[in-house]
Length: 486
Image (cartoon, rainbow, N blue to C red; front, side, top):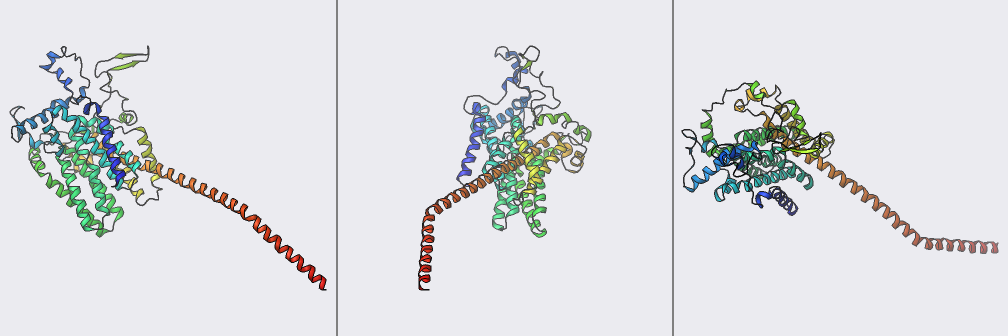
């Protein structure tokens, strides 16, 4: 990574800071405390504080769960106690083993040194900046130019999936590390030097371990599946059987070390889920019922087609006025706005489509395989996110999936794929522009050369003309003399 890359990384971090400027620099907080006025005892003071309805009822979990978790961890640590047990729910419940509090996640230190309500803004901005930086690094590893890699980074970090998931900090924290893990996997695949390969294995293991500590085991499962899919695809496409086995062994080692690093969280979690009542509590048809309905495809192009929970007014098309509306009445979608966060932008969709259509004609080494990989991953993600019968493969064959009630979260791998494909499309445009500049420069140099030759001929022409004239006169004198002798 050179100086220009470092400047780009700094720019991506600055973009995240600008996005959250009201929170970072304006004295505001991300915690939706106004939602508390819906419940006693705070509801008795709603009129006193001028709260008629919460700004966004959908993000209630952020204050009822995440804020309470972070506050409990911070208070426990200040009391020099490990938050192993939460005595404030029912007769008490295991706390540290659950993981979703992200207590062991390195960046959670912000909640322990700052006021929890203030720390949230810095934490979320940092995670989105991290997502942008890791995606930039990954696409640079895929040999995209800076411009194209920057496009991928922005699309990923500021996609609907990432932005609306800020209500669940553990989700964005885990998702932010996937591009970094894929970058290490790609470098392992390419490396011919054993020492360098070991370095990438260790680096990837650290990233994977940190990702587990973020505390959202479902996102971690997607991370493992996407990484396995990536390595299998690239390994089969690129290497001989013997070399492929070495690569897969290296990736398996990376995964094993990463899980070991996170064992302090994963082992208690495994013990806890053994008593999870969700195991076997639903059928495949129940889970498919929580997937996207077919009409949800509209929000991939128009995210607010079914409304927005933060909109409190609507335009009356009959008298052309803006009318106030109670919270919730202008949202008429089946999936709530957070679960339905699938929008990546119109331009990224166009760029991704360009990459898919033209990528198979690319002359760049390995680019056809890369485009096919992420196009396939995006398609598979859509197949699962819309709850087709193929979801049964996951439900019955993949351990743990029968406890997950969220097929809509396959929008996460879809978002990653579209961000990378958008980068490929941007690279295609940049390459064409550079090619046109190069051809234009060659034409200009050709015209300049012709002008130079023309000027040169103009200067030399009189000399050659005089030389030819002198030879003609000499021949004429020779003929006259010869004729005179005869």
